[in-house]
Image: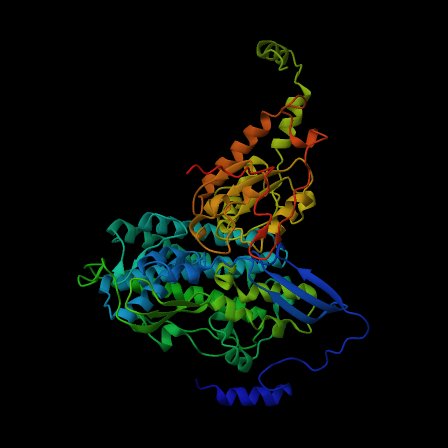
Length: 394
Length: 204
């Protein structure tokens, strides 16, 4: 990446230790107060614990404790056929099951050199962008909920989510756990009626985005709480391997849809929003802007979607045994880079199956963002990372 | 000891409302069940969707999700209970005040679900705490949760204040606390609570 210059510059400007933006002034006077937030805590998006050491109201130390939702996903996948892991990928990041499907399908397609027909590619893009809208709207809603506005913004987000989930349900048969993609295409074809219904929903989305922005962006309390807290410097973000909206809010132009151009993303015109102040408000704004770009991609994809098969005729469905080798497939999931690393030994099961979850790796810099902030802001900073525990612990 | 229905209607016409203490008591409890704000995994998202505008759990008097177990009546175990989380779930249940109810939501909470084969997933929360309603599904639809909720309300309606079948919170001798499992050398100790979940007899 081309931000080496940026890295050196920012380090010099901040006067902080290289690479890690920990302030040096954190020497407490007197005793520290240790607070355990979680695993049952309203702000933790599930089961996650933060052991926070406080000097007054300031955070001196923050130790995340994982593993309350470790469901041995990777180990289970090593014991079953490649296709049998597909429904399990739904349950990784359970808000965006379709992008998980895509990442896994992409990795296996890379492993066996499988082509995907045109129509299936378009369907994948449409579903992935709808998923991104669901995720960004809900994550903004959850963020605001943690600020104390319990319910209302989330209700707006979930209203749109229900519309999109109805589309998922009529196409795939399930609201959340879609299990839709296959190696070399998709499971069922979308009817003309489904595409029309999708066009109708997409036509209503810009209005939702306007409404959401009018409701939230200039809200005084939101600006007071979000601006200037939880600063994540670009050099730290890059060093820690942070991806997704969190990285882009730190001003690093890195979107795998643009970098890898996987699938057919080179055909669509969309912009990558970047943050300027690297704080919680930027992350919130980047998500809202990305939501708008996703609507743009959806409009283009729904206009251009061709007729044709949805499964490659040469795709092997029975006796699926990839040749020995390894592959890493990655996509820009709504939360960041979601990758699957597979090693095949020629058998029906993967020899090694590894998930590169964006949530876990984005969470590793939580302490660095929280140090020196108030305890009340820890909840916000944590919410702005946008994690799902199913993916963190797997 | 219900009041004769005809007499009740006749009195109602005259502006007299007659009920039994039991009915009043059950009515009060079933109409304001406050669930605990407690999400474990995927099902929690559907639980949140149930409280939102489309499904609107508030119609049944259950929109107030309490973050503290001390203020909650209902624990919705929404999602996979891992062996690391199980002691906390039991501890939270112990901290809830009587009367308390449990809905096991989703395949994972009732049996371990798709992750049952794994090494770290508890095969059903009913091994440690008494569950009132089980909902299958992965995840159950919001309608299924509402149905479970209505089932629970019916169950509460049928409870007696006295007699052998009275609920645990009216029974002074009933067990109020449940042993919290701990992570032993290989697995959770004890592997189940025999008072709640009798180990099935295997016939070979």
